[in-house]
Length: 301
Ligand code: PAF
Image 1: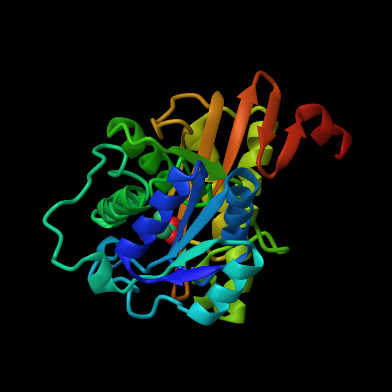
Image 2 (image 1 turned 90 degrees about the vertical axis):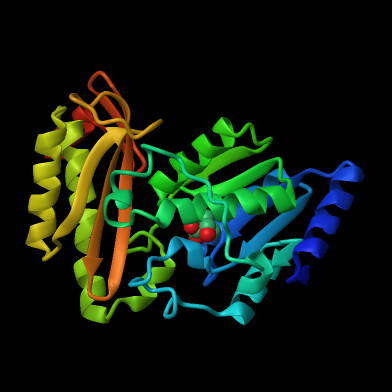
């Protein structure tokens, strides 16, 4: 594995790989790599010849009152993890290397970035799309891998790539959970043992949503109430609970087809996001928490 901190060197290496007929896969991260990131790297490794992983805590996607300064960082552990997963090029630039001048140009995906996390983080997604567009432009990947935990980010990046005709396939990889159900996130490092216990309530609340839908609930408002009720039982006060169409985050009157129930909550010092995706086909409901059918549920009663 080669560790690179210069844009020009990364670009040269990726150009050379493509010229020699290699395919390039990109896994953009902000570091503090956990099993979720490692699963993205493994997906890239399985698909592509040259795997590039980037580690860059992007200041543009943090508001002034957010956790940029305290965001967890551990470049030596990240280097070891990336090497163990078979990354070819690890790109860990400084802020001046990525932004030699204050950027005058940003990428904005209208509409999609306004609700859910965008409601309380109005500048966040512009920071994400801008840095991801820069990384796509430097690396020129044919495939880029993003986790489905950041579901809105995935939809936004996919739409940016489509709108701008960027020649990259954006792949969404499964959300990875800790054994207690908590979605893996670098920000879990902020949780005290008590907060961590409380944070399991987020998963319990999403399970409640999945179970309710499996039993036939199709009213998004009712599902939201159940999630909030279950969260409250665990001391979780959700910032938002939204049931949306998975493809484009459109609001729904009735839950049907591919749906995401997405939530955010602050637990202690950590703002956590999580979601469950569901494919609803008649009475059968497939979720990424497992396949649940009404018949199965009833036989388990
Ligand atoms: O998901 C993240 O870690 C970041 O938002 C990303 C995509 C690496 C852009 O900074």
